[in-house]
Amino acid sequence: MAKAPTWAVRARRPALAACTALALGLAACSSSDPPPAATAPPSITTQPASATIGQGLATTLSVQASDATAYQWQRSADGGASWSDIAGATGASYTTPANQLADDGQQLRVQAANDGGSVASSAATLTVKPWVASTLAEGGFGQPNHMVLDAGGAALYVAMSTSSSVYKFDTASGSKVGEITGFSSPYGLALAADGTLYVSDLHRINKVAPGDTTFTTWVGSTAAGYADSPAAPLFSNPAGLALDGAGNLFVADMANFRVRKVAADGSVGTLAGNGTQAYLDGVGTAAQLARPQGLALTGDGATLYDTDTDSPCLRKIDVASATVGTVVGDCAHGNAGAGTDDGTAATPAKLGYSYGVAVDAHGNVFLTDAWAGIVRVVTPAGEVSTLRDASGTPLGFNFPIGVATAGDGTVYVGEHNSNKIARLKLAP
Image (cartoon, rainbow, N blue to C red; front, top):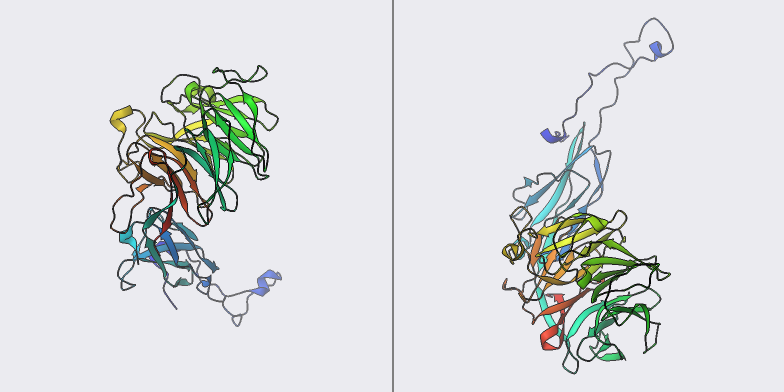
């Protein structure tokens, strides 16, 4: 029987003879009563699975073990010849840090233990792949801004500033399969489950019914301003949009330095920001935003990410409480805090001036750093990486603004200054 490791030792009770006589109120126990059965070590019922992951992304491994009371995940960098404990990884599941190309081939396992001993799971291998960029579409359109995918990832909608249109691309072929015209300056996009498309356009939010090629103005006007309901709602250069499952539309009201919320009935309120261009975490209108630009919601609709372009950091808003916080970056020092250093907040990692933002199915947050011409990714734990090719060189883009992530892990990036839509996949 395997001996329980030191991290799994539990206080053991002394072995006592079973005494059914005492339970019956009798005077003595029989010396022939058997001792209690020894505790058996845990049994692994579901082994952790090997994972293929993109450079810069985190992954989660899980185990199921019957009768386990303690866990310790371990890592091997030499093909399983030796193992070292991972600090703090003491649960039935473990989320890795951001995986880099040097982590390719590393193995993970878990020791599950109880009072009777411990058992090691099988080893799961991490395969870390670089990113490969190709062109989805190029030329024939003018300066892509923000973008949004349909639920299945088959269609990509892109706001085009110089053509005053929204283009629809087939992601399999890269062909343009639709166009909605007549906007003033389309910028942000959000797509409802029923196919309704929302477009931020100058100082208003337009709505396009499913299958239509024309739009109607939903809220706002052609004149800039700031007003919440019950007055006639006004916006000033609204940018990124994000839509939740209940039909609430969140708007980065860029020139008003606020994030607004448009309910499904069209009523408008202010979620965060007080109109002062500054950096200050807080609740609702007690918080200050530098220039809200890109918005993205987590899958559960609970957290709203804001790129807040004029501050070199990633902000987040708890939707239920309207609490504004900072995920990573050095907002407080303005331009002096900007940079492209990868790592964690403690390193410290640095962000530049991010524009677009998208969240994938695993909670990884993708950001476009337009001025540096790169794409960054922030794991759920707040670790920042720059997307890189097989040589470790950062992928380069010509002033990227829009970004969207598909369910299969594909990332789409709009290169504003080169009239190009790039498609990023993992190397085969």
